Image (tube, rainbow, N blue to C red; front, side, top):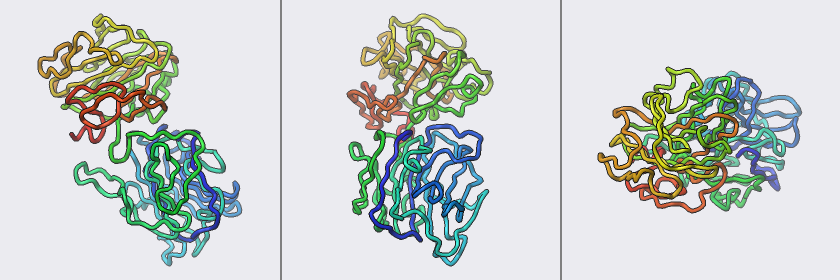
Length: 450
């Protein structure tokens, strides 16, 4: 939602003493080390001296504040830091200033559990009016008309005007995966200014609460397959090999990477497995393609033992293909396939961890070297026989500012552009540009549990 927000100015004030806001969020940037809040999730403001705001500080702390006449009269700042870009967080904030118990006048829940440890814990005075539910500008994803944008994804965003609910009213633990997921039809009431935003494709600001409080959308919101119910893989900015002085830029919910200096940088992904069959796609976005990018898989446990300036192919359990058709592993790179990838081409990767094989394809062409990802233990046309019994994750390496790579792990987008024409996918998990081989699925929570 970077540079994107949803907003509405209510026609009349609702209940300013009691309300609940709930949303699932997935971060798209790393937290810095400063303490001023940098990304706004929710804000109601008349000006810079009068506002109610829920924000994520640059440090990763969650910050909820009510400011009246330039004075802070209520605030919660967590001790805990929220920096994981691979996960969906469920955030619930409750304002109930008329509550007789001062400690219950504000509550913050993360993933179904109430936060109790705060660096700042200033309770509102009895029956203090918040700025929320006043007839002033109310925004999701920014503050004061388009500042401090939230950079990430959101799902199931709800405001309940006049009601104090617990996190369990909006979420529950999935009996199969054990993951905290949204209740698709929560038994809650929304009140005068409440809303339920599902971010459906083509109707991203539509209110599904029945109250008719549809939001205005500024910017462009895309509807991803990546949801709290099926969390998809991304590149991992927390990996030690990719956060040195010559860093990677991570954008588009951590699916696009580009080195910021002339060193080799390697980015493993956030999900992997030691068995099963998986598929993903990587697009060559940059102008530097041949010899400056590698696409494949690696055992992420090896990364911590190597200094920076490493390629996937430098690792003993790193296996990758470059745009010129060379393949590499364990410091050895050799000519392999007759192929040449160019800017905007897509490298398709089929990883058979059950049979320890990996296959590559250019766009929708035949699999390279007459590969057959469905050949099982025979491994017809596979690029490598993998060291078996290890955990592998997707990985890429790139060199130089123009070596951009964007992945589609099944969310259905390269950067912010939807796949042109979705290929077949018998697993039903994820949307890809080209056909997924039979028996393969996506690197996602559902895919890993199939």
